[in-house]
Image (cartoon, one colour):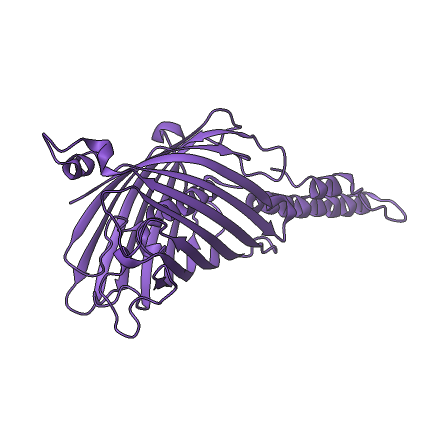
Length: 378
């Protein structure tokens, strides 16, 4: 998008008039006018480059929503759940999971622009392969995921795109207390493509240092694991307060790189998770998360952009009862349930608001709708 105010400014600047006009004076005047014109044009181009939302912004918002969906229903909602969504227990040996997600959302601003964005229906089928493996005996695990998605809108002004994302993390996890302080270091690469992966659109490389912390409670409000820590409090957790955060550096070869600080407090209610829990009954969970991001962009042509993003996300998850998967006469319902990927139904309502010292980079977007999730662990 163009910074029209700046553009108009340099178009109307006249060449200065010199007393006693001469050929030399006219040349000086022309040179000054040209320099001023190119100077303001450079500032306008720089502002345009930093103001326009990129496919990376859309991918970031989608990842925030997906990570909240993957984490809801498994005790606490922290960033580690994005890697091992099916692994409720801390520690243990190597494990792998494959997640298939099919969301259909109403999107209020497909292009992520300041105004006149397209309100439309969005579908984003996604596949994520994640793993967890212990590193020696030092209480550190290596986790990661590879994610591929196809993002399509019923109508938009060029917002369709595809993505490949890889994230790799070393994180403290002793396997003795799933509510322990868990710092980590992480590298993530995001690759955006034109539709059908036809050509690269943008790439970012991010290095972060962060942490996860969970505080789990029984239904009556008693804290779990205090004073004696427990290895896995998932089955007993009714309320959970989660907190994740990081500081990082993101390198964007085709645009402007930036430093960032991120914080995500959350509250989860595992509604059906009581002390007398019936594992064959339907499981219902809900979470509310607020993602807060602050970014400082590198200076370019004398201008340095900085921005705030606030992203509240509400997630409701329904895991159907085992009775939906047969009577058990030929094959146990548990086996059928696992074979077809432990299907569950998720509804989300998410909002992102981006504030900036460059007004044309500000935007807001709603994404509201259901999704179906399937997961296989091996």
